[in-house]
Length: 267
Length: 267
Image (tube, rainbow over the protein chains, first blue to last red):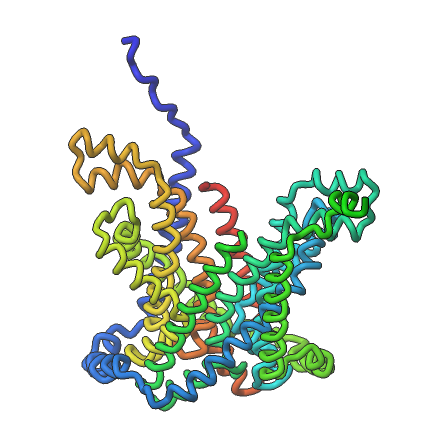
């Protein structure tokens, strides 16, 4: 009897909690499935037309239009330029905002929260929605794409930067203060050396994401390879869609490899 | 004497080689910025030149057309339902793929590398392009969007989860194998309990991503609120667009908040 395992404590509250979760989940899924059932026309999806579409479209993806390589690469380079300009701008704009959000630098709860709110609000907008707004503002050109990427990336980079700043070793800063360094000196000798490698690493990581993001911004007219996707898609030119897809996959993979290499060296 | 005193004065904080590398990379970064910003017409000057457009933009988008709100609900719920269905299916489908891409579970090198390669390629394809392809195959509507989201989220989930599985403690698994458990039993009793909290947490995270993604898939006809945005932009009905954008913003913030709280509770 001495070896008896103590009985598992059974809590009434756990049971109630689990039942509540189950009920909420069942309600959500019933609602979802009912709505999907009403909206999806199964007869149309599993029809002979879909099979024909498969026969017509899928082979074309594996026969990309290599003749278009020139135009596509030109637009792909524009895409990279948009991503680069946007993420570099964001990498710079995010620094002051991140310092505003870091509670160990700006010792004012209110200002910290204001900064975090701004960043959170920016992050809630999908990039393509930002692009729609900026296309309406500055017209359908790459500049709108750059603005969308810059603003969208600032949201994420500011958050990551501020977390890096909050994680620094404050002893260094204290030591500098104690030996009479002024604010500028503390900033350049106490804080920057600790945060710079991670700032750069995050900025490069964000550039990877931005290349992906900017490749679709053209769908709403913000420049880059997305413009070609819209044309190819509207003309049912699936060979060209296949070629664009191939170009995106190759370029994104190469950029990921390069940036991964640089980031490993940095941190 | 001069020689002797010079020994104690460090010439610089950083060695000459580091300085050289930093200079070269800075020149490269700035040079590439100049090239890309000038080709995309987004040099710093352009920001100042186009600043006047901002007032124009505000005049165009504000005030939002609140009467339009009643038209939004149907498509908004469609968006949320797309995200729920896609996340659920993707979570279930990703489980076998996750096990196949975890190096400590799949000991077959060829299979492991093949799965890695496949998933890396899937991850490079932007969600909207997947939607374009599936809209071509299945026609306009919610179904194409769901399929696009499923494939998109499998890419993310498998990547995140296989890293978690690779980091688990292998001792329980060895113990179960030693006492005669088969593969299924090993996975069920040794792997699942260790990764379940993270698995649920990542699923919620992917749900957040899917909400953002499903908002924009409608731009290419794959169902959801993006279809409305597309329509109103084509009619240049900007007050309605700003209503939709504000509603999307609110929904994204609320869902992020709920899912963030749930994830905090789980981990």
